[in-house]
Amino acid sequence: MSLVDDILRGDEKSAARLITGIENGEREAYQDLSLLFPRTGKAHIIGVTGPAGAGKSTLIGRLALAFAESGKSVGIIATDPTSISGRGAFLGDRLRMKGAEKHNIFIRSMAQRAYPGGVAKAAAAAAYIMEGLGKDCIIVESIGAGQSDKDLFFLCDTVVTIFTPDYGDEIQLFKAGLMEIGDIIVVNKSDTPGADDAARDIGFASRQRARSNGWDAPVLLTVAETGSGIPALVDAIEAHWLSLTEKGGMAARKADHTEAFMMALLKEELWQKTSAALVDSQAFKEISLEVRSGRTDPYSAVRKILEGLEHEWTFH
Image (tube, rainbow, N blue to C red):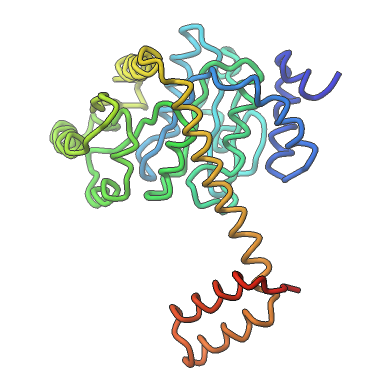
């Protein structure tokens, strides 16, 4: 029986092995993934983003258990700049996922590996593989990378953006775009002073963002540590999913998101291949030397490099 067959019958060890293969860039793994891809597109993929320290991990743990207790099959993809990929670890701290084994929650913690989108490069593949396992609710945590976190939107159906009452300079994140991609906005740690004021201010900022889909992003108060506000958050997530399905445009939305995520990955792959070729190019070294010595400004240097690429430089 093939690895794909094992995954389709619910074998989590096979799923973990395939995710590792994708992370390592193994050709065979991508071939297996292509066989799974036709089975995807039905799961509700929920993205959770926000600044460091906002309580994303704890809130995701609460959400996952709430969905599991309601009868849903749940998977989690947690992205961490320093974590080591592995089955059954949630950012290296299983204590945050009490009861996970009891509810058969499949957890994958993966390193960002310098991918600039805020989501691990293999996160989309992991989501597809979890769908192959039969998970109907998949929660994706990003590292909270500001502007680059927008790529989370291309992978997920519903995006939850988390702030705290003491958001301070996090107002910059509004400008970075997290307010735009958040379908639901959460003020976590709402048992601290200033929570109501923060919710009011953030709600006002959110309402200034025009939305073309007719969905008004609610602003909710939670205390992830105690579970306060989690039922209301679950209801809001379900309501957003229902609004998407009722409009009959879910297939087109998922197709648009998949294409956009493909382009984000393509840009990264092209940059990696191009930069690797440039580093070994004599022409690039000469231009770099001109910049370092002050004979050429960076803007002119970039134009020269692009012109060289257009004329098919041979990189050795």
